[in-house]
Length: 375
Ligand SMILES: *Cc1c(COP(=O)(O)O)cnc(C)c1O
Image (cartoon, rainbow, N blue to C red; front, top):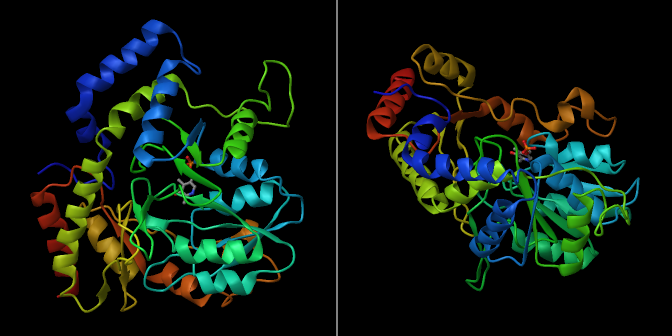
């Protein structure tokens, strides 16, 4: 049996090595390292895949979020609502721009931002919402867009973990995760569902004006070279990463199916273990299982993690501390106990190996080791 890893990028590469190597070699031969034809090609391929009008490639997922907020013309002191149970980047960019992060709690079964908590947190200063499509399924964008429209708020979707997931509206209409709000943002960090071999990210939007603005901001605020109409940043997807992503995009649906197969295998075994709560699938989103995250209900989460590690099974805690309890984001408004669901989850969640190359032997071994712990 191959060594078990949280993410096995090496085995995945073996399978696509020929294509990847030749595409990377082409970039080197062309020396079009920045904004070359590969970037344009990948951009168009992703627009088609997502069925979205504009993809704006950029340097990483955190930049994508920052550029989205910059393009929306938010002013210092404006309030932006997001979840306390997410990766720090989401709140970081809000704070960096001098905006005020307003954190809210999540749903206990899905770990996703609660639409009712969002509505309860709205004040006259609220200008935007950043729902996070955590672990691979979409937050309830239908409800969130209704709240946003009612209160005239902008919506930036953090889709760093959900690329390829479909959101399904009440009327049956499907839209790709990240293409529903004013902007969607994603990350191509190597371990993400569509990962490159370095850093990368992108914004998505169906709004021509916002797209033009974001395109200027990622490029020093200029449309015509050396004429700067906006204060921008330098955030580029390089051509080598775009070439890698172009190859891997062709496999994304297959990759997401492999992840679902592994999740189904886990579910089947773990549904029989009383102390475990398996991931709950929401009705209105497909799941792309960026993470397979269980809740350990008997207080033994850390002991389970140790047992697995001792037996060669990596397991991670996403996330051990909700944002309102992080040193950098502590605030008089948010005492311990402020967000009971997220605080409970931080103590109970554990993420198991989840990637595109897990085989039956490995899944059998991992589930055996989990079962052994609860015997
Ligand atoms: C990975 C991630 C980001 C940041 O992406 P980077 O490319 O690492 O900057 C933002 N939000 C969430 C939810 C993520 O998982």
